[in-house]
Image (cartoon, rainbow, N blue to C red; front, side):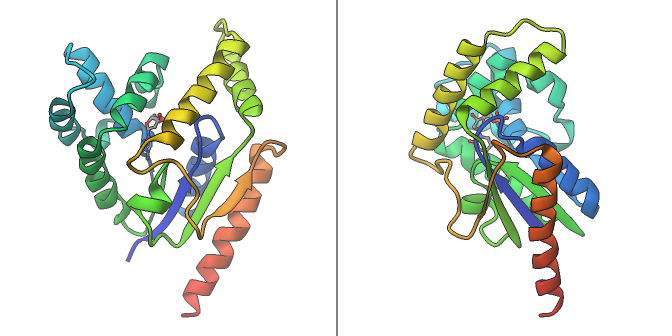
Amino acid sequence: MSTVIAIDGPAAAGKGTLSRKIAETYGFHHLDTGLTYRATAKALLDAGLPLDEEAVAETVARKVELSGLDRDVLSRHEIGEAASKIAVMSSVRKALVEAQRAFSKRLPGTVLDGRDIGTVVCPDALVKLYVTASPQVRAKRRYDEIVARGGAADYAAIFDDVKARDARDMGRADSPLRPADDAHLLDTSEMSIEAAFQAAKSIIDAALSRNAQK
Ligand code: DC
């Protein structure tokens, strides 16, 4: 059986970097499930299809190939916005969750990050982490990232965007963003990535050794 690590949390909390580091450390496969929503949104935008027709979006979601998800292409702001709109549609979620669950079974283990991994996609995951940080810290990290890449960024606009994205992700009826009851909370507001990684690693190592003793 595959060992599954589920990592959830709001946008820009540091889940991505943390998940990649965990996957690399344990030799597990990694899936950023946000990219599956983004790929669906991009395919709709590219084809000039509407973002508010559930049946159309579902057909497109069923064609998303997990092997072809390109983070650089999919990270564009307008794709994220469109993704968060189609992510409220139950049939789109159902299609993408099926593909994500199939991925989670890969051996020897998998790390999936997103919004509903511990609650819906992999409720039996060995370890569930809920990674968060204050909206101010998340907006500042995103701002620094854009500036570091040589871009122009507006902190106030990014902050408003982070809050709007939270409201949409936490407020939707189907699979809203929330910590699973058995998730470990990791608030990275005042933590470096390295410190967050060490905290996550202790939790995972403890769970793996408990599992080995069963
Ligand atoms: O993490 P991200 O910004 O790449 O996610 C893009 C959108 O996809 C986000 O607004 C919410 C949605 N999403 C989701 O509903 N469920 C997931 N498991 C992952 C992302």
